[in-house]
Image (cartoon, rainbow, N blue to C red):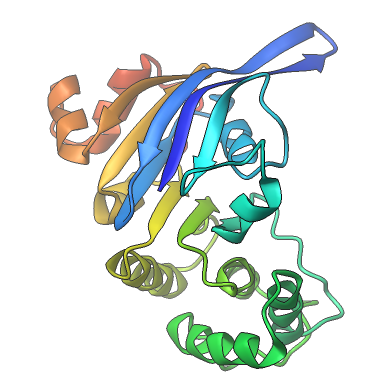
Length: 248
């Protein structure tokens, strides 16, 4: 379970201080996929970076399975698998080498890493390219490798920043199946996306962020009812109060 309480974070810019995250609170439950929605510049990516400890909050807390990440970052990260907005693979290593390296960084033995990777190769459909160097990979191959790297240590909680961005239909369907299996295993999943079809197909709960604050949260059905709209896209636009920044 991931618990976020009253997160706040500002940044310096040429025009002055920008409050990227003003007040964000929500809980992502085990065995559910929680969607994080918001227009460009809403504070989603900053919230995720605060969540996995890349930056520190000015106020508020993040707890991963009860562990405060600001108090014990190493322990909290053992419970967390993250696909960031930048995939960051080592191009001269093979997909297998990239993944095993991160598994061993998390303290797994080489044998344990290989055993877990065998399952991931099947579930993420990586057989064709697992032993190729990552240089020259397609977007889908990079994303699958980065996801496998993020979950090689078997984390209970998974955070994905726009995992299907730029992927073809078949790769997207494969990733959806992987996320559905992870949910069935009782994992807690946070999915940041701009794609409303992904939210409707996958998410049990949705958190809508606009201008650095949570403006709505609930099931997709509850958000449609709150906005008095028939589809989720129209509900989203209504809830944030603007079409600016919406990507379809």
